[in-house]
Length: 119
Image (tube, rainbow, N blue to C red):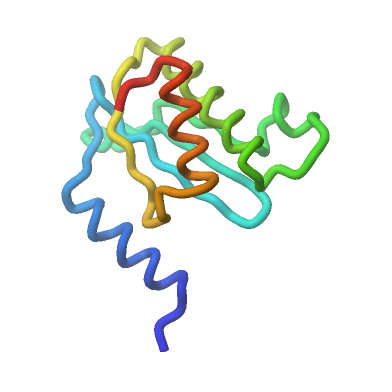
């Protein structure tokens, strides 16, 4: 029997064949674990991470509460959008990383959109 992680990785590889990021429109990728949320803006043409945000960052780590919930995902979404805006990035391509667009992934995406990032 194939494990859930392997199935997610398969879905992610299948999506990555079609979704690529550029300097002008980087790929906003999301990863979630049980305890934390991570988001990155990646330029696939040069292979560089342009911006990154996570619940492990000092500004979010010092806040009280669990870091693997919807509220924390909203904060990460707003933070990644702010970092992208600071670097002059207004548009992105969303890569949900093989996860369902539901719960924490959706909360992160909607918070990034509300903060001004278009995708």
